[in-house]
Amino acid sequence: MSLPEFDFHAPGTVEEACRMVAGFGAKAKIFAGGTDLMLDMRRNRISPEHVISIPGIEELKTLEIASGMLTIGACVTVARVVKSKEIAAKWGALCAGAKALGSCLVRNLATIGGNVVSARPAADIPPSLMAYGASLVLKKTSGERVVSINDFFTGTGSTAMGPDEILTRILVPEPPPHSGAGYVNLGIRNACDINILNVSSYIALDGPGGAIKDARIVMGCVAPTHVRVNSAEKLLIGEKPTDALFQRAGEAALNAATPRGSAYSRASAEYKKDMVKELTVRTLAMAYREAMGR
Amino acid sequence: MKKLIRVTVNDMEYEVAVKPNQTLVDMLRYDLGLTGTKNGCGEGDCGACTVILDGTPVSSCLVLAVQADGRAITTIEGVEGKDGLHPLQKAFIEKGAVQCGFCTPGMVLSAKSLLDENPGPSEEEIREGISGNLCRCTGYLQIIDAVKSVSK
Image (cartoon, rainbow over all chains, first blue to last red; front, side):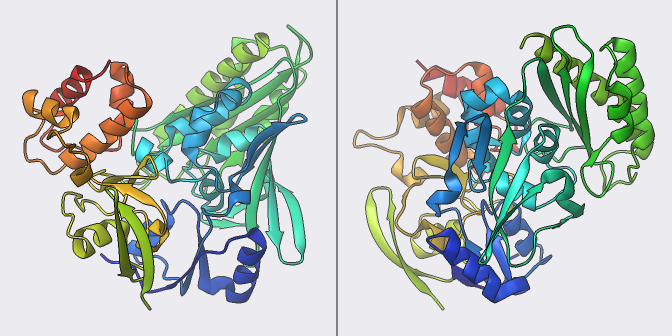
């Protein structure tokens, strides 16, 4: 199948790109890495009149760690995150998500911003960003705003981003001492796979060997968007980490999951619920191990 | 409306008039006649259309031809040197890593990119390096042997 006809634009700056999305509105689609957009166009799910290509904008390719904050430009490729030793050292769960995405060929094109904005419930990047408490910088001609990634996803493929806005960068705070995170994705094969399920967990301890003072658990593929498991988080906070506690948190995640079971969603609802418990327990154990070593 | 782009392919400069919705793989095959790059799934899953774009292997079905403006591409036709086949190509022949041949250009380019960056990859790194290239004759083991045989 061939691509629909469209006008192609390659703005040189973010400001120029903002003016274009403001002018074209819903008639335009942003091309970041293209790994989702090209499929959607080829399968006739969308046929934009204008395609605005942004991977050439230098400002969107910033990748820096400064004053306790990791800043990832929206067009930083997933491959760059996989290769970054600095990100692996402090934000290991984010790297694990990046490594799990597509194949190396896909990762060389796919962008971190694109994987967020596409808002697919099986995506590999959003869970760990949510677990680390990331925020997103959205820009339009009249200015920019910062939103928590927790409030960003409104449905499968839809977000809180306006048609006149562009995601410019992602801000990920540095995890405090005695904290850790873990990400696990479940699929049929390692490369070029769509997840059956994915979970990312983060915990922060009140000093070495202390109680859990902060927790974030995020699950994917069990609802139209990635979701936080508030019930499990509440149950963890204030408690000393133990295997039994993690089992109870897993049980809470199982009860909170509302997966759709069909051939399309790649596994039955029952299987997904059982696995969400297992992955919650596993990712919490990973987070705990990291927290004890930091 | 077609747009005129300048692109370097296998160290040769070309000016090509391309349609906005034309993919890079189609430009290489139909406008430049470089049919070594195969058009497989068209969705970035199979790797048959792999080319090296500014030093990085990518699926050329996911790139628009207009986005190649001002950039440098290596296709399978550009891998051969003055002295004949690239050592990796020779290794593919010696190890029986080619059957139907459809995945071979992409496999060779992915493997070449891997070795250019990491001349002594482990078997796991080789498997990872070709993870985006599917072989339906299932010659993966011979392909891995071929890559290993030219690793340092």
